[in-house]
Image (cartoon, rainbow over all chains, first blue to last red):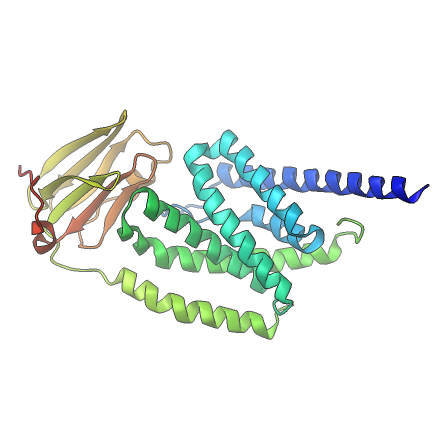
Length: 173
Length: 124
């Protein structure tokens, strides 16, 4: 096989893996939509989709993780949560992705730390968007709940992501 | 699996977050007015101690707010997620019921806050 054909095969592989990751993230979004946590405060979620995103950051790099996340948000917005939900997801998703990637690049943090920061940033981004949309800073009273829920779910997702990433075949990247 | 930097990050987040949470949660007392806003604009201010039913209809969305026995609740909403209805009743200053899809905010304020030049005080 010539090297050109090889590299083309490589990029097709990556495209396929990226598509699989996107589908998996979308399924996780759907599962969370179907089974909401029994709490009365909006925005508390496990963030299962973040499991996929964080592994994508480690294995496939920023560009892929970003694309996977955006496609997931648009698709799940159109399918489940509505256009307004999409807006919140974008604010939270992009803020958390950028922060997670920055922390990952420093090489100082483990997946648990990266995911923890991602969880907090995701909730913060959504809360800030909500404040902007209803132009009411009073919403910040949700801050405490969202901070700790983001922290805890981020840590849990980070632990799971760490174990999955370790067992994932090395050629998935 | 967990590195030292993770722990430091956790401590930093907590160090910033806990004071902010305390600040945002310290429930005020003495709230005696109910302020309803839509889209950031004041829709009306109502006394908390008089029972009252309010329909807020805006852009085809309807939210039904009930003031009863010094408590306010969102008894009906056309929104999809019903988070506002599930919030239940509130009665303390700084408490709020928020309906994000319909952009309706119901909050409890004290009269000093409400006096600030609000012309549209509706009683009854």
